[in-house]
Length: 326
Length: 275
Image (tube, rainbow over the protein chains, first blue to last red):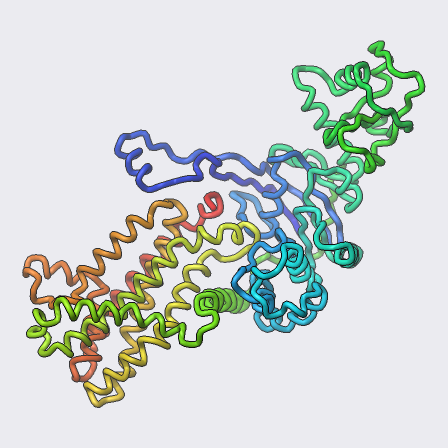
């Protein structure tokens, strides 16, 4: 359904963004013009996604997650390699991007629908259903700028998900509108997830990936590092982040040991989790995740509370912000 | 961490069939053109005729200042007024539509980064909206003038030729400048100058005979002048439409369109890194 084969992408770097003619002419005249530098954004990315699969793409900022989505959606063309996509893609773009504030709600529905890939007739025919779902019948002929931002977000969601697409692309978590609309949009999303639609989700939040998908692909610096069951891949991602944060030759476990020695947080009970045949423990501090090997603590003679055991990596949702957990 | 290797039974290309692609392109151009017309003329049916006010007012000003001085070249003040109006109407279409097309690709960068759209729909739909206005506003006026002077409906029909030429000409410019603007965001200052040069070198409010012969030979290379000359011949001369002038106008416009389209095509690859 979706296949990427040896996809490489080079892009001009950010510093080259603001180009102007005057400066370019002066630069050429003074012989200090240099051609724009390029950055290797995707390196030999190869994977396939089958019909109906729910796949998460995970990785740190700037690892090429969103770029990969753009390549799949046909927004960016790879420098080399092939991309094949079978079926209609519905990108759930930032809700409301592409609306015209001066057009009425009905006109926006027709306009946005066509921009998303429907024919004019289809877009017109969808107006009533979308007004109904978003609860905006009373505002149908008002200009969009008269609506609240919540209403606009509702409208965006209703249009984007009105027709069940073959492939749904999500680049952010949805939380829009009031409670009842949130409920309805969650229902609709779940239905899209349950049905035969292929779903690709991008996130740097490993919990979200675990909750939404069965399979995950880990990207780092534009390369596929891991591709497999989302539980394993997201755990690997967490451990790699922890490894990177420590830096300077110190391992995650070192740092964890230091943290435990100095911290004054609450301690939760748990049993750890197995990764690569090794028992690991996940600690969350604020928004960061740490990974530790319990045996390491003992080996390094770290003094930690005797009654501490560790909670399993997967159940960290209800952690209050800023609190340190084991 | 094994990768999933499940090969789909068939994986046809992402490309649509040519016919579907064309229909999609047309739909996109139509809704974007509609959108800009609706936004501009919201709440007034007469709004579309507002586009006439600019050439009418400018004709008034030129006539007040140059009318009596140049009327001998044109036969009468009335002829000067008509020649001036016909020229200004076309020129106004060109400068208005292309300067709106100039920032249209860069300005829609947000959308282009979220949806797979052909970027050219933005300059093309700008020209389409302006063309619609031209046909509703200026064209009927000029067609009536053509019938009154020539007593021949053929002249009104022939007026379609230079109109088509100015549309193709503007389209070529729109494609080129909207693509260049993605790379050079200070292009609008230079473009104002280019439009001014085209404008002053097209004999619109002055008789071409005033220009020294040495300079005049170069004015012949201004395609806009050729198109305006063709309009005037059809609308004002009272004679049958000149095939020669129509041919020159269409040819000049087609060349400009071909150049504009190839500039666009060669710059297109780099767009997405810059917007």
